[in-house]
Length: 339
Image (cartoon, rainbow, N blue to C red; front, side, top):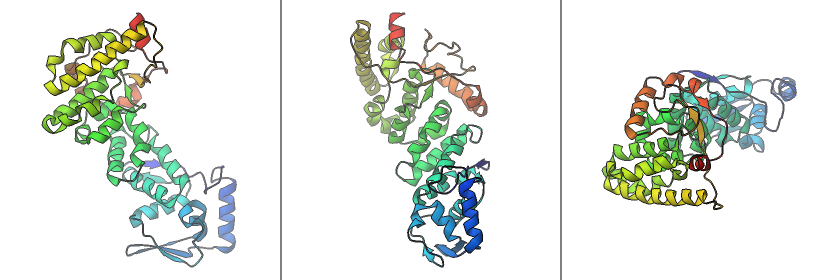
């Protein structure tokens, strides 16, 4: 990734106005009066970085109570000198550009240094659909998974889920481990046209290495909101389980039976909590879902879904600009049952 994104600088910690206004002016005034230039040293490995004490104290909780003028501080945290330098550049500049491949290390730096303004600015840049392509977004997500920083990948998950179908079409999805596939499939932020796409995504991941992954069948099926499936698709799969591997078919049969009972109870007027919806979208190039209305009576086979994924592989760059996000709706279960 070689593109650059603007990471907004809203001023020092605790300020509620943009840095170009009051707080930035106060900081500049203080620098001008008695803290001309660099007056502390930050040591990372063999690299010595000269910085300004007031800037670091203003932006980072890590330095707020201990850093004094003239100090030399060796950082014990794992951070590349170039990343710290980039973070410091952000502190002293208005809305600097950040290389896309530095977004995750910079976010880790913001969290580690206790710079909530930096972390906020990075997340805003990451969520800007014009700054990051779908591919860049899930590359950042995968990098975040590899950092082992608690909660880091979860911060990026909503943006990645917006491009979920593009991710499923890529080889990256098949390389994820079961835990991270589950996190994706269970997210309320998942953007799909029908819950059947989430089900098929799970099947694709399982089949990529079925002998070693079949032990995760029950775990992954818990992420599928079968109660969001229209009854005709539930019945379709109930009649065509022989298409699936034996172990998978057995577990799916249990899920479908529970779903049928749930839908019968809803139809009978039982007071049941309806499942939370996903983010429903429509893609004009999708061959099986051209109707704007959610889950019309269109039979979507696994083969249909795989054909759509092939289209996504050649049209990824326009995916986010062409999809239509449908207005927030309650679960379609009642509408489907009563139609």
